[in-house]
Length: 177
Image 1 (cartoon, rainbow, N blue to C red):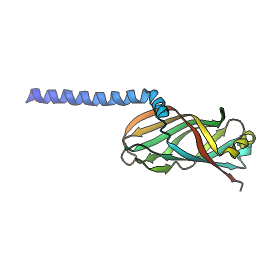
Image 2 (image 1 turned 135 degrees about the horizontal axis):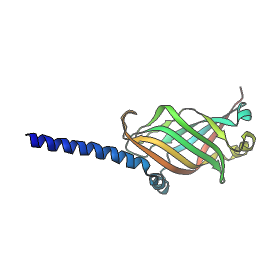
Image 3 (image 1 turned 180 degrees about the horizontal axis):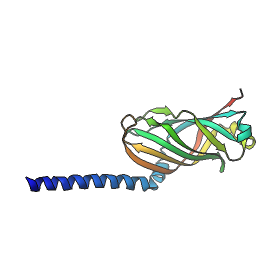
Image 4 (image 1 turned 90 degrees about the horizontal axis):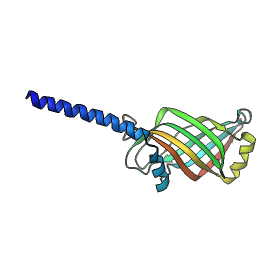
């Protein structure tokens, strides 16, 4: 009995150690984004940009993003770091950690809610030129997710780096009050 209990304890300890190591290895892999880019699994269906009179002063806008999961598992998004633009020029960048993580159910569409402080790297006036095109290219997006979550809880942390998505429909709203 004592020998069997010891073996069971060793196996359980090994399983816990391997599970933690697997999560660490998954988080450090940069090629996950490359695979997603090659397959063409864009998560962003469209984005909405909100321009205010303050934008002319501080060169910042707020956005919200509509996401759709092609996967059969739940993802929970904790943080997004992105640079976007058009015709090879970066017009906006942001690094946002969600106060309440965004839960993306399997094969469903959700909105991120407002993401503030998106910096217009070319300045507000120069950035107005791209509104007429109604699209944005996501040149590099890093997404910090937890996969296999249950209602946004638990999950395996994975950092997906370097996601790219071209010609994402973009809607622009002027909030001048």
